[in-house]
Length: 194
Image (cartoon, rainbow, N blue to C red; front, side, top):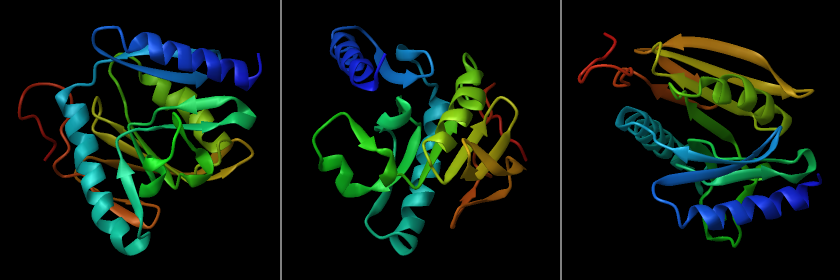
């Protein structure tokens, strides 16, 4: 199926999801359009908020006019992919443009927080899609283990550089740094890696 047809189906799924209870996302992955219920935990959302806040402060000097946003969808029609990262570094004015998704050529970086219910989406599928889309930097935060992976240097559909960290580290991420001392693992209230 060509991307235009998949995109039309994705838009229909998105319209359908508006009438459903709960929060839903629509992505186009290797198998085509996907409608998935989103149930991120408070810890998932707290981690994204901390990352966005830190990157927003640094983007003021490294990339004026860019922000770290929670969503929106990003797309690469040539490889038939549309994904909804947990966070994405893009020019702020792209959020004022019409349409459903941001053109991937505008994306500097993406961040995913691994879900306990579907870790393969971030660790396998998106790890294949994001370098194929040409996204320079991909951070995977895994609250199940208290780890962070930073992937960079996309080439021939894969990232050629990987750096691994643990919660508590100051993590270099492209031209930025993400402090992870306040990140929380999934588990009991107040759990934190010291």
